Amino acid sequence: METLDHTEVINLLLQLASILILARVFAEIARKFKQPAVVGEIFAGIILGPTILGNFFPGAHEYLFASNEMTNIAFDGFVQISVVLLLFIAGLEVELHIVWSQGKKALYIAVASMILPIIAGFVVAYAFPEFLGVNINDRIVASTFFGLAISITGLAIVARILMDLNLFKTSSGLLIIAGAMIVDVLGWLIFSVILSLSESGSEGLGVWPTIGLTLLFTLGMLTIGKGLINRVLPWINKKMAWPGGLLSLSLALCFLAASFTEFIGIHAIFGAFIIGVALGDSEYLTEKAKEILHQFINNIFAPIFFVSIGLKVNFITGFDPGIVGVVIIVGLVTKYYGAYFGGRLAGVPRKESIVAGFGMSTRGSMDIVLGLIALENGLVTEPLFIGLVILAIIASMSAGPLIGWARNLKI
Image 1 (cartoon, helix red, strand yellow):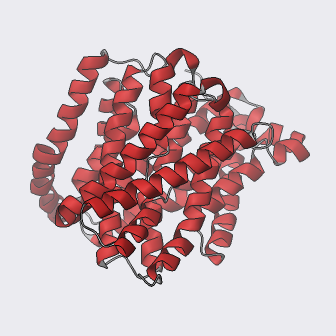
Image 2: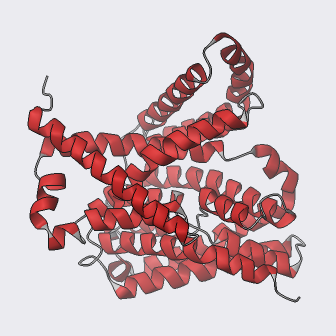
Image 3: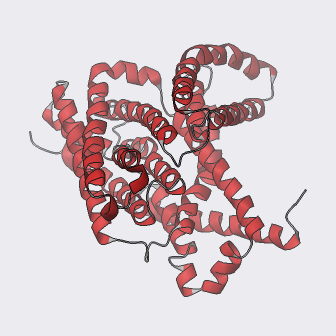
């Protein structure tokens, strides 16, 4: 069995140390400017990656991130675990009772905020595949993916913004959060189908068995699975050391669900997300336990993933102003107006619909994960992926000021 040698272990540890240190520094800088930590972590990756370190100090970049294949394979394993855990805690944030409480209004806003970007994104990508950088051999699937990628709302980011603005528990805040939760669930279901239809997608059991098992798994986990979790959690809390027993078994469930969806041909992160929804909606998972999981994953594993984005692409050589401009304009305009018209259609007052439009336009988590998976599966090129990352940064940085401005409108 091949293992890392002395030098490779040192190299891997230096990679992780440099990533965590720089991610923390830039996350704190982002917080000083009232921006989400993910913005700072992405910038940390750009600095450590080929864009800055590789360009100005190629020797240091070569030693840290490109000199050893075995070390890079081990680091990729950390990245895979990080993204699985990131989607697990994203699922924990989906509280189904909030979705039900907002009812038709949240559903209209969520669906409309997805339909308009998906249609517009598909039309643009299908009409100009070479310009935009979608896979011409997988044209329909890649174009659908692009539309989906610009339709996603960053649930974790918008939740933090609403908390900072003291809007989280207001009617507008709950409406945005419920809509973002619906978008998360629908987005993963649609993406799972897209990836299973793709010629370049992961191997599985075949398209229709994969789709059928995906729907069965989702419905089963949110009904029977959730019921079993509600029965087992009180016993775990009573009989096992707290919080150790709960944390270890929660992560074990996450990895089991992730391995199952990977086996049937859907990316592992979908299983992690769905088990997170089922577990997070349990009345026996306390807020303190959720907070421990969030702190553990958000401050250790999430930075590894977001920094790795900058390590994979060169934001200077891969930057295409035309592509970035199209992605930003189509992404921001269609997402905002989709949510706004969805709110008006559901009878939401104009001012509240404007707030919902800006809130639902927030990105910065799931959309980047989707973009990276699409890049790795050959559905999109590096310039288009860079455009999606820049869209996420701009949308997450502008959402707070725009929501604050919309609240003060005299309508």
